[in-house]
Length: 423
Picture 1 (cartoon, rainbow, N blue to C red):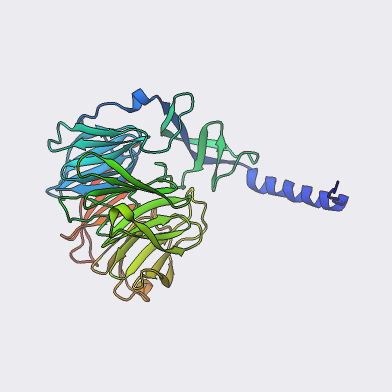
Picture 2 (picture 1 turned 90 degrees about the horizontal axis):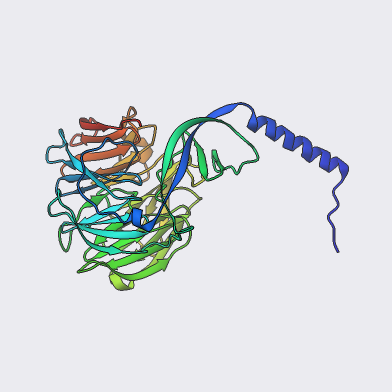
């Protein structure tokens, strides 16, 4: 039997180094955001959805706009509804409680939403009285433990001593069932541009760059951590296919006859000419990082960031030439502060910088974007953005929802703000 022999000197050196690391990393206490999982039975999850009284924004997630109705996700709990006919005065209509909800898509008054392990289809012709028309049970591969499903997380601010023996996760650690992340860490991924919109084949809404649901024609597409699913929605929601892509899938963005899939290892481009026979055309790989993508013309824009459970150490914008769709090539990489979601319309590029605001660039010269910063809204917090054809910009972040008039790009005008109310 072969044995490894380590000298006493080596052992002493490793011991001293380890003790040094412990002293460097473990002294003092730090503030963390604690996330405690809430487990529920299938019966508790599969509750009827009705329009309840308005609630405060507490932990807003993704944005969606449909026929002047604004939908703002309350992460893991449901959807806030606002009448947004007048962007300077959005009127709160109420709240749809949907356990484990993070994403929606809407076509012809049918709202599709994730509900932990299911996808539900709601007829919202009458917003005040949504009707469940279909529930696709076990649409997602989420295995229960003792007949309980992970529904959502309850968060709280705590001050904790840092134990080096805990499992470290990019600025945090696990203790029992609870996850502790430093308060600066972004956890919007706990769901575990023109936006993602295609208007052909009926009335379809618009989502942001971090969307996991999108609709093209008569088909709903969604991504989970490892796969892309296709659903026919001509009548009842019907699964067409599931494509295994690989771990770390995050976002989906449709453009023309293609689907652009963002993952934490690269961008995947699928041919969607035949929705029931989509196939992979090409891949653009990058360093491990959170990765939303938007497209305009023959250019794709990808943001990569750290400070998240993606465990990345880079913050940048990759601009990619997709004129030859089977061979995407990097045009240029631009350093960023902490980029999240993004949008592009008529060469105006909007990049959410998390706690550091929102930046607007002229992207008409793709190799000189860093030289053409038009505006920098440093006082807001932003994680995703939707650019509408009427020069209205919708922005969501940890401090609430904002609407801007960007008809004059270098002087955005704030129209309204819905603030987050702390628990």
